[in-house]
Length: 260
Ligand SMILES: Nc1ncnc2c1ncn2[C@@H]1O[C@H](COP(=O)(O)OP(=O)(O)O)[C@@H](O)[C@H]1O
Ligand SMILES: [Mg+2]
Image 1: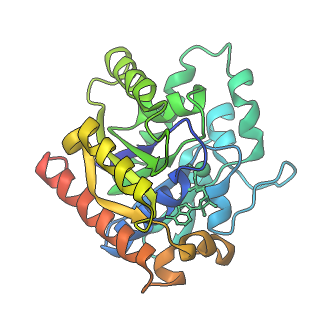
Image 2 (image 1 turned 180 degrees about the horizontal axis):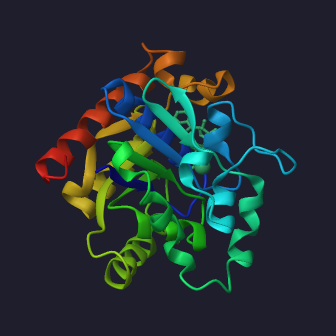
């Protein structure tokens, strides 16, 4: 059965989508079958792999899964040999409102995953920058949360609230839910601030913080324009090295916890 990770932080611009894309691609390069799920109406993850979301497109998306009960495997597209994507749609921006009256609305993604979970080794969910219904669906459906934090002043702002939400979701819906790791992203080693933020984050979260740090690397920002992961775009970049190390570390942590 696949392990489900949700990449969550209610702050935007911290590296969630970049992490979802390149961690997934890194795991796929290690020979794992990986499904990425785009839960953000901005559809940055879908766009990263060349799937632009627009209102009038006929192609199916996670909106159809959550709103109309479409089967997840009808929505999934293949990106590479063992890398797959369930794209988002701009329509997801209305999901919070439209699903407001639906009983069990927080369980929709978990139910949808049931039919595909045996087909993949890993499922990686990219969440929107809020703790609304879509992120809640991600938290209910996953077994581990990955929390990217930007190596900037106020990095920890909001992370406590996020971890409180994780606790609440664990006791209300998902007893197996845990923190897979806090990931320092956009790390600029030339800046003293980055080092001091990293120290604070490690002091605060201890072993929860991944050893791997994702350095600021322009290739990571350029890869989406080519519609591919950092490993295809620039395999020799520091971004490729960092996300390769993250994929290794995620595998190791999973093995240590007996999940894999
Ligand atoms: N390590 C990095 N180095 C350089 N640019 C990065 C890095 N991580 C993310 N970015 C860029 O920063 C912006 C925000 O990242 P993104 O992953 O979209 O964050 P989020 O999904 O949390 O909003 C994007 O333009 C992305 O390409
Ligand atoms: Mg994003």
